[in-house]
Image (cartoon, rainbow, N blue to C red; front, side):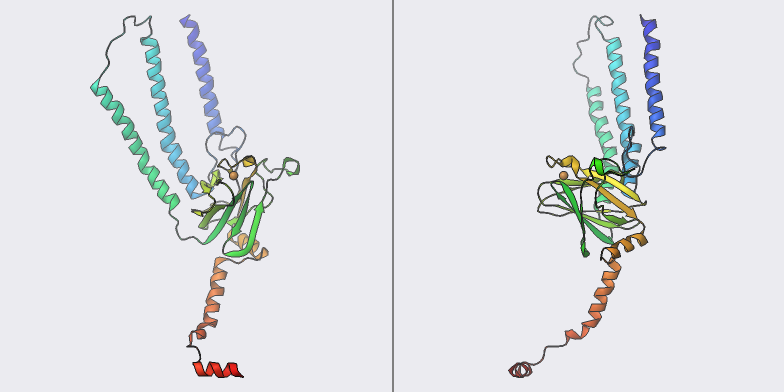
Amino acid sequence: MRMKKVPHFRRIFGGLAAFLTAALMSTPAFAVLGQPVPGGLGLQAPGSPMKVRQDAFFNELLLPVAVGICIFVFVLLLIIVVRFNAKANPVPSKTTHNTMLEVVWTLVPVLILTVIAVPSIKLLFYLNNNPDTQMTLKATGHQWFWSYSYPQNEGVHMVSLLVHDQDLKAGQPRLLTTTNPPVLPINTNIEIETASTDVIHSWSVPALGIKLDAVPGRINKTWLRIDKVGTYYGQCSQLCGQGHAYMPIEIKAVTKADFVNWLHQHGGKTVAEIEADIAAAKAKTATHGAPPPAKEEHEKKHKK
Ligand SMILES: [Cu+2]
């Protein structure tokens, strides 16, 4: 019986290992930036420095720790099944306490969690501390779509609706494509603000490493920097009702020059241009700082 089982086991494990290796190695080859791929394993390819750091945290620390713990528990289980079954071990030990073992199995998990906590908190600080941002995008959640505005440019806003299956063009991913995606420049620190007009939604784009709840009655803020030109897709990530699956997020990341062109086409101005306007207005109104005319003079003027 035993002789027969060994090759069978080896075949299953061999096949599994070959499949995992092939799948893991082939993922980057067909990885598409900004969207999930059929049969994809692992996280989406990064398009932002925040996602690069999240990937490193997951792939270099969390995943090895999790796999190590799984293997350790699996091996312990195998030992118990083989060595301590009723046949192999007819008279079980009556031991109930072991001080050393209890100290170890309390301390080791605490140590593992501490090791994870340090880089985790560092990463949270990086993600949450807005550096100097050069522009703002505000995403507002509605049941069931997103609208966007550029607070520095009052006139520039858009409503992003789901493109239904029958209207999809070649290459447009299903349930992710929108009618009117917001455009953002690459290599720019962008403040992201979220708000909601009804229930809690969550604005999430996996390849950019961003997920921010959109809560009615308040504005949440974070920041984003995009490294690569491309189209990035995401979905509402807070169960918000019947149409939750049908409010995708699509972002077009373009070069700074293309962004300025796009902004001008939509009647908007860059932050630098707005600042120049303000400086010019300040220069023009500098003389308005003079004291108001005396009371008598003012009355004389109005009597006429
Ligand atoms: Cu939602």
